Amino acid sequence: MHWRQSVSYASLTDVGFRRANNQDSYAYQVCTEEETWRKRGHLFLVADGMGGHAVGELASKIAADTVPHSFYQESDKPTGPALVEALTEANRVIHERGTHNRDFERMGTTCTALSLSAEGAWIGHVGDSRCYRVRGGLIEQLTFDHSAQWELVRQGAVKAEDVHLYHPRNVITRCLGPEPTVQADLEGPIPLQAGDKFLICSDGLTGHVQDEEIGFIVSCLQPRNAAKLLVHLANLRGGSDNTTVVIVHVGEATDTTAINTPVTAQETSSSSPLILGGMWGVLAGMAGGISLWILGQKAAGQALLVIATVGLIAWLCFLLKHRQSQQSPLLQFTAQQTQGPYRQASARVTRKFLGELASVVGELQRTSEEEGWDVDAERVRSLSAGAAEAVEQKKASNAMRMYGDAIEVFMKTIQEQRQLTENGSR
Image (cartoon, rainbow, N blue to C red; front, side, top):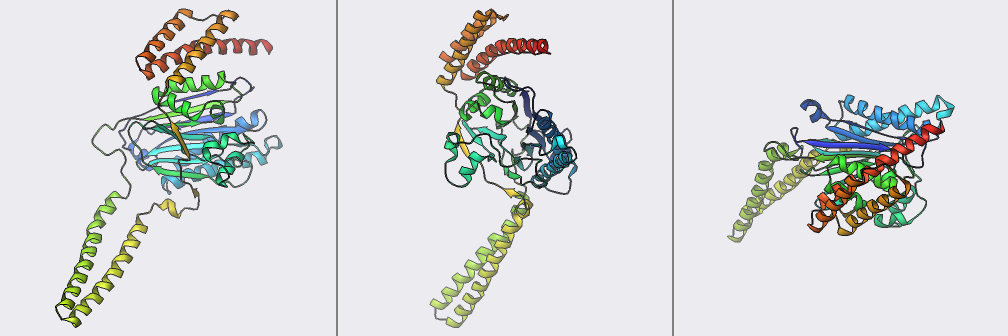
């Protein structure tokens, strides 16, 4: 990724329909100075707290404050290890806060943080909040859930594609806060391409919206519109939990600099002549020795072969040492570095899914008429007609945008009525 490469993003959090308070938090920091970006990159994160009432809310808020602060303050470590160090520091702060107040004891939070830098994408992760990438018609889950369900995958008992069929659900095995130490997963560096879209979300989204549906929406819509439609779908399908999404779109580079340049490219190119020269020297020596042997000069040929063999051993040792030196400092780091993506699904929107959105709009229209909601019915009809026409013209993005706008009309009314009800009950 290049410093001048554009990045557009959007975030949205919602309490849902069954929770009294929102225990999710999110944060982002987009670098405004090139030097800061080169050291750390842009940062985006989602945290999903757990614990009664304000306890989980406090834990996720501490994570959302501590991780960015620690990440950008830690200047001695490379990007990946610094991200893990920031999660470790957040765990320490949350745990310490919990031990000082009995009401906050054992409070915790998930946290998934994404850094986009010159090296590529780094993801630091604890819990079951996820990070996805949408690219080339596919949506890929880049993080491994720390949950009872996904432990079955780790043990090889089930495939990642089938894990949703197994119980228990929503039981996490690792999070920030309850214990004095925590093991964070680290993914990366993942090469970036122009057009890549990343989604970080709490399980309030993935509990109601399938991966391929997430892929359809994120691939077709701008981040702001995609975030709203994803949250609305989660709520319309039950809204059993808080839902938080952060969507990041990597744009085109503004100059001819490569989108993603490996950090060791310069060092590799400077060492290549030595490697190639050594290889050709060894081969030439062996060829010369064999030729002398065939021509009857056995002593000279044997001596040259011995010298070539010693050269071969030296060349192999140099090659091994060179490759080890090219490894990222991360490989000597003690954090757990994992190997995603863990599953993938198609992100190419289908006519069936657009039909489902049309059905959602139709059901909301019927409910609105029966309940006497104060909505702009003419706007909804116009959007629905335009979306249906776009479907026939095979303009999936236009259709999804208009269906999303129509759903937004109804959801605003639902949220306003809910707010009036909550205010009246106080």
